Image 1 (cartoon, rainbow, N blue to C red):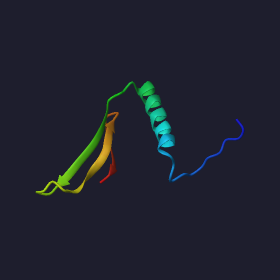
Image 2: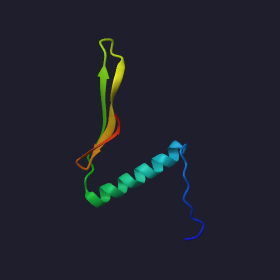
Image 3: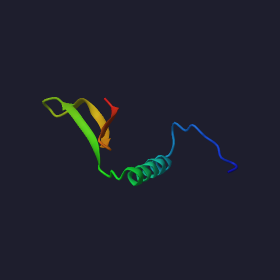
Length: 69
């Protein structure tokens, strides 16, 4: 293939990022047969309900992937 290039794009469009995420997800499900996915959002809240901190990530393939803590 000609004309291919690798580019670093810290401010990539959400459409491009979604294309890559969905393509990888489809490939992984096809190869593993494991389709269970669950987003994770756990929060520490004060008495008024304001968020003080938390953990964000997801569960797939029997693994917990924490993106933010």
